[in-house]
Every structure is written in C-alpha cells, then in structure tokens.
Length: 200
Image (cartoon, rainbow, N blue to C red; front, side):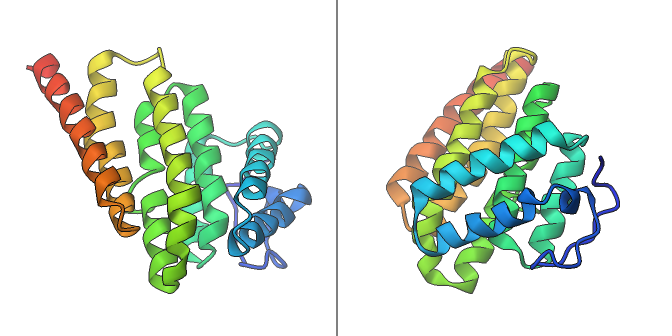
C-alpha cells in the first residue's frame, strides 16, 4: 500500500488513499484531535503511539511521502491531525538514518512549528496544547536525532543547532515560555559553535 496518490478531506469521508484502507488510521487521527480538544494529554500521547505504529509498520511509504502527506493535511486545515503524521515521518526518517529529513518535520515552512503557529492563530487557548503536548514531542524527536549513530558528529551539531532547536525555541516563544526558549537557544548556540569548529 502506498500514499502517493493521496487526496484529503478533513473528515476523511472522501479520502482516496491507502490510509482509507487502514480503517483505524482516520478514526485514530480524529480521536487524537478530540483528545487535544478536551486536554486529555495522556490519551493523546497513547493515540499518537498507535497512529505511529500503524502508519510506519502497515503502510509501504517513505519518510518523504509521509512528510508530504502531513503537509497536505496542514494545508487542508487538518492541523491537529497533521502532528502524528509529522511524527511518523520523523520515525521513518530515523529508520532511514536521514537526519535532514527528521529536521524537515520541525520546519516553519511546513512542519510541527507551522502546525503550532496555526493552532494558536486559530484559537489562542491551544497554547496549552502546544506547551504541554506538542513541544515535549518535539523534544523527544530531537533526542532521537542525538542518539543516531549513522551520521557524523558535525552533521548532528549543525542540524541540531540551526534547524531543530531553532524551531523548538520559536514554538516555546509562541506559548510565552521565554525561559525555556532562551535555554533552548543557548543549547543551540553551544552546538552551533561545535559545528563551526568541526566544519572549519
């Protein structure tokens, strides 16, 4: 099963893709959104794990295909539903040993930071969701990147500093957590210095 010919409807009633064949995935995405709406963060985290397992193990897709799917969801206004798919894409990129791909899942041009910004722009009360649920998940992926052994240290430092920590810090600023954002930027600067020395 592949997802390259994906079309998206936010209610998934007319979705034409392999995801529709996996009947649990659209319903789990909606369940995930419901958990966020009711601030049931423990349940949301569990549902995200279920989605991640189904997508990464039962769909024959690459990290890039999942990233494209997540961005389609985001453009269609399915903001909350895009989060687990970005995370699943990061999981596949991790398996592929593709650090740059993992960093794309954070990006402000169509990644988790963009989803955070759009959620808050639509409803300011979603700051709680971003702060208590999404940002910790972003940190989890960042930690997975640091544990990768298939890339050189200088590459880890560069991407960790310039892309990932920068987007996490921006999301922390969105929720007015300036202390966390400053600490994240400080760590990014430390890794950036290491990267510059290694490259030069």
